[in-house]
Every structure is written in C-alpha cells, then in structure tokens.
Length: 131
Image (cartoon, rainbow, N blue to C red; front, side, top):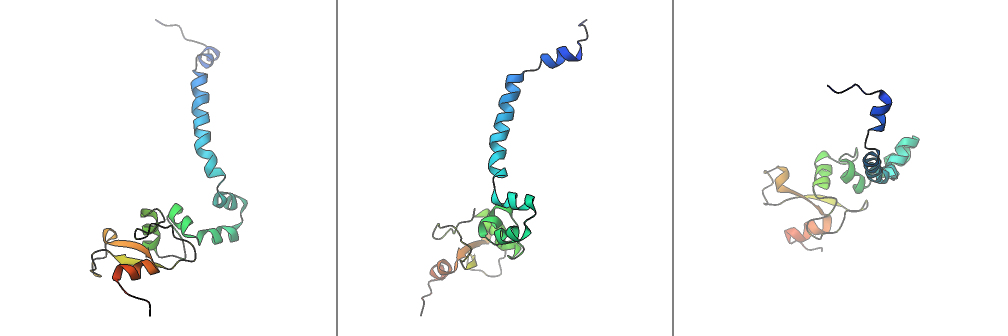
C-alpha cells in the first residue's frame, strides 16, 4: 500500500512547466478580448461610448444584438460575418441594409431564404436601374 504524501510533496509533484504553458496559452486568447474597445468602455461604465459602438454593424455581428436593429438583421449580420454576399464588401455604419429573399418568394420567411445586402446590391440583384 502506498504511503500518504504530505500536502507539500503533493504540491511539488505537480507538472508546473505544463501548467505555465497552459496559462500562457489562455492569456494569449484572453488578451485580444481585454483590449477590445467595447469591453473597455463597458468596464469603465462609459455607456454613451457603448451605445455608439453598438450602432456599428461590426458590433451587431460580433455580439449578436443591437437595440437599434431588428433581430433578423443582427442574426443575418452574424451568419454572414458582417459582409454582403453579393459584392463581398463589409457592411459599414452608413450603409443601407436590405433583406433579400433568395428564392424571390416573399412568403418564405426562413433564415435560409434571407440574405442581407447593401441597398445598391439589392437593386442589382433585382435588376432595377436608378432613374
């Protein structure tokens, strides 16, 4: 039968080098989030800055929520990773965002049938011209 070790011996028997490597890896993954502007503003209690940052499509894409955008728009932003499938460009705060029905059936309101496009890309998709 094995003898019971003292707490000091148990502590010294731990694989400390492996533990330090794991802590370093975790720190590398946490650091970009801690440097995030949104995170810092939220931690400081700067709610005006948080509100301004939430208006950007980037934050709706990242967080999946934005009080000023409809739920389906924020969900589509998240699914499309903040970019337009028609032109491939990222959405900006000043862009007009329009929901496009992929199969043309406006009664088919499933997320699989929707795509979020720029206003001008939506016009191109439907073949309309500016007059």
